[in-house]
Image (cartoon, rainbow, N blue to C red):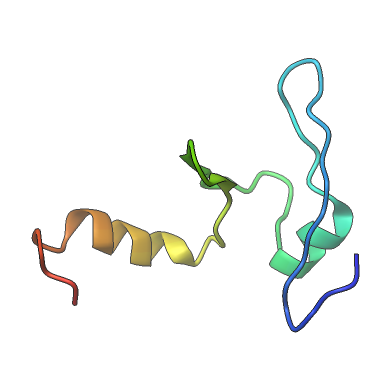
Length: 72
């Protein structure tokens, strides 16, 4: 799918075992290789997100290192 300044959208079909195939272009754009572990986050109102691998450190820090009310 064509992009608008780094924004993309793709579709994936859920198979019988609940698996999806990440489209080739998406794997290429985001450097996803066979055997990679992906993080999936879900929000019942907003849907599912698969953030870039590099976001793990930032997400970990926000979830476990910051004190309540501390928005550093």
